[in-house]
Image 1 (spheres, rainbow, N blue to C red):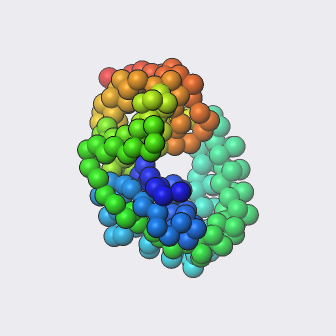
Image 2: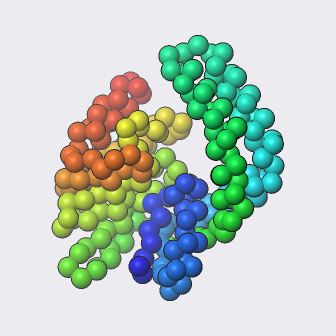
Length: 210
């Protein structure tokens, strides 16, 4: 492995960078400047330290959130509250162990706009199509393979992009669906074998912002 691409800076996507570097020390990590800045100067460093040290505070906050959701009474809240309780009473111990061993490893090479990598007969395009979920999102497009790796611009099976900048996210989805591809690997979930899901998300966001 000589190249690792960070589609964005969220911890669940980048805190494994260190493992690749340990095994392949000459490897480049490619990302946009916003991802580098997020990892070097953003909240990640402090969050990793806080999570590994102040677990009781995390658990108490989680218990309050589970109780709040359980009282809310919306469809599905009971299952969400149970999931939160399981996480903060059990899973959090495994997460803390992992966070104690994390060394935040930022990108080593920055690009903006578009970058093209040639790997034998394979062309790999790194594209800035606009705001996704994190900001500084990267779409990886392999035109000869008719494949898109979308990062968290397209999570599956539940879309997640309603926290902010919905109109900008919608524009990004429209640009994404214009690419010539058959298969799409989302930031979360199983591989998608056509554009149907992305088009459904576009319809949903258009309806929400009308």
